[in-house]
Image (tube, rainbow, N blue to C red; front, side, top):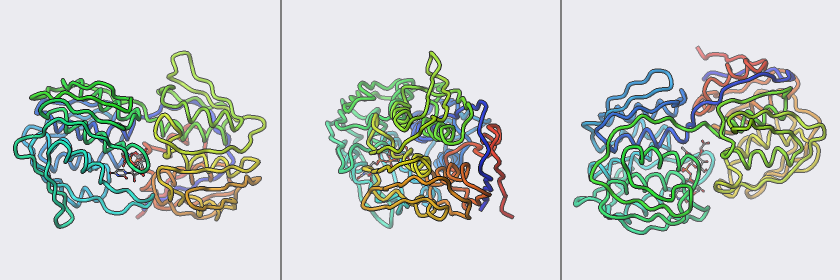
Length: 423
Ligand code: EPZ
């Protein structure tokens, strides 16, 4: 129950490195279950979600070593049951389903429970795996899967009511790499994290074409080898610090980014009047506050659209930007927990059926606030950096799930933050 004390007002300046991607690391760590050969995975961020995944891999029987950002996994003798006690802590544990079913012909994984950011069914994951011939029963809160004679390649449309599914596409791709014949995934997710997983699988010897498009083709192979792989930078962590720099910066540079993953975030920063400069190779970015920032409208969408995982952070910025802004989340329409907490700091935000209508105010004032989920807590930190006084952000464990050493990085940029450890 650590909390963060943030005293607002300091201008941020200097350079920090962006960590490896949490959302690329999680399915890639699970994918190591597909092979008996050693997998070395570099730049895995030290956040609680990746540590949960490593605990799950150990519980499944894999040998796991970690030294700072490098993880070595050898999944020689593994079992098909993923323990409820670990799976319930992190939805992304669901991406062990595809590898276990594909490698062992059976899997037992607990059905994920509710999620504060909204309705998150797994029907598309199950549809995909059943499309490859798996029999699936739900019993005692567990999904029991069995593919006695092995999985068979097929053509499967993964379109959902809110668009493609990221982890659903990952699970199906991981199941298909050892299946007999060819699988075609239609309406596939094309997030950079999906492409990074495909590149990891290809480095193991998988045959995959079209990752990054809406149509992915996978030709099954009998077995896979080992690899030494480096995950992509975290575009959501980068986006979060880009917003911090637009709000409170005085020349902040982020190193180890990938410009092609930050297009929509950059567009909205420019549209709201701020300055964004990438170096020639697109691996570093400097963000400078504009002289006349103005409100703007945002609608989230699957990649390359505007990421739902950046919506809360921009809400924090627009809360003190002159003018009216309308933010619509088409992927998680209820994902506005941060707004009520920001209202406690003086923000003027109306939330109504999947939209937040933000009237920019002069400034916010400090108040004790409660983090509710990963990105909402990042938004509260951003709001506090500009607020008058010292804000107390409780339940910091939410932010530790996906931001590596956030307090140390903010201190490096000159922010006045203090982590208060719970006794
Ligand atoms: C991934 O979650 C990310 N998590 C999420 O980031 C991110 O918000 C989300 O993609 C969307 O970009 C990881 O990569 C670990 P989805 P995922 O399946 O794959 C509906 C963060 O902050 N849907 O793409 O679970 C679903 O309800 C996290 O780092 C179905 O209807 O999301 C949603 O409306 C939060 N049926 C939409 O699809 C299904 O079977 C997209 O969800 C699956 C999903």
